[in-house]
Image (cartoon, rainbow, N blue to C red; front, top):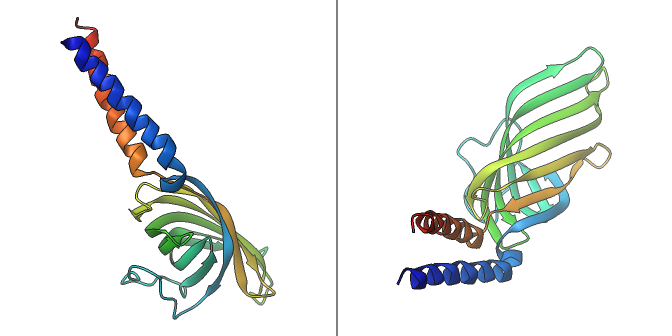
Length: 188
């Protein structure tokens, strides 16, 4: 009887694994992103609602792989005598990835730039590490890089987002069950 239980557990793990292999490209994994963004005080996300606190800068309206609004909250900044500026903080994105995976994600960011003595930006860039989110971005990770285009007054972005799919969560749960069954085997 115990052999049948073990065989059923193994069959269940194999079935879940097969589903994950078939569903993984559509439901999760690492996705390369790129596009452009501009400051837009009237930015409205395609889904969801903006946060109550819109941040320390005008919202950023993203197009391309990401469609939505980006809200920035400054934690610390420094302007060095050389004209180099450094800033850190957190952000919230409300919108969609490739038109289908929608929700919010949060980042921790570092921004560096060079300015003239009159505080005109010469160049700037920032790195945004994704720290999680809601909806399709629950447990998301990845990095988005922005580069300022000071001539055209826009931001070019690129990077990657790793979505943890429901199928992968099922596999993790099945693996836990399989591990528990494995513990029973050593008691035989």
